[in-house]
Amino acid sequence: MLLFVDESGQDHAEMPCEVLAGVVVAQGNLWNLIKAIRAAEKDHFGDYLRNVRVSEIKAKKLLKRKRFRIANQKIDIPEAELPGLAHQALVKGLAAHESGTSESGVTARELTAYSRSVLRFVDTVLDIAAAFNVKIIASVVDANAAKSDRDVLRKDVVYLFERYFYLLQDWGFDRRGLVVFDELDKARAKHLIERMAAYFLGTKTGRFRSSLIVPAPFFVHSELTAGVFLADLAAYVLGWAWRLGGMPQPSRDELKPFARKLHEMQYHGQKSREDGRGFWPLHGIVYLDDLRGRLDKVGDEDVDAGSQ
Image (cartoon, rainbow, N blue to C red; front, side, top):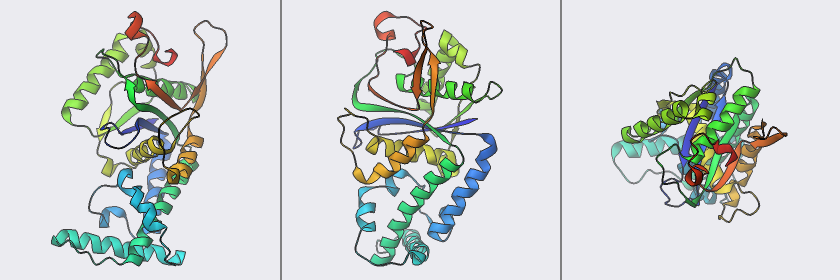
């Protein structure tokens, strides 16, 4: 099994939540998933995006507010014409970028077609992921959540690994889980690896979970990895549009249809209660308004973050 992980909102620039999102893909499905997403690119844009785009595909750019305003312009375009017009917009934009000019010559009709194609593409990608039984696990954190002063693996990361462990357990003990992060700068990657090592080797809970999760992460460039693209998409959409009752953060209504699809793809499971009396329900997407755990209060090195 592969867990692709990406984050959004950690810069606190605009998003009301920090999100650490993971998509879980069975190895046997990965290549067919990639091929299906690439086929969707050609269907919606007339070419593979890597051939015509200027920069890597990120949800922040694909799903910005302006994209929806442009897509909703009152310009009548038959659906069959959208891919061709979107392709023209991309080719003109790439040519302008390569020549260093500010005027691309993209028409309003082409730009509208491109924006509509983007939204249709994102919707198709989520449907493809669901068809390949991709499971969503994520920690959605209030931007103002109190943080621990201890130099340990953050609570939102521990929650992510907790759900990954139980998903692997549910799917069979013969499965081992690898973790694939979007590329980080060297300092952040080193810090994450050190904190993961301390958790998986230095705590009882972590050592137990290392029986299924390989605690040595991989780092890849999202431009080359469909799995990380899906995680980036999930992180952005969940941060803006996934809301439980009582969550006070503002949301973007136009993203809620995508958030509902991600909500339906989340993992659901259970784990035994500490007192042995029944089970705790587990949901793949969790909301945290406080990143401090019991460790910050009692100093118990083996407390399970999932029960904090």
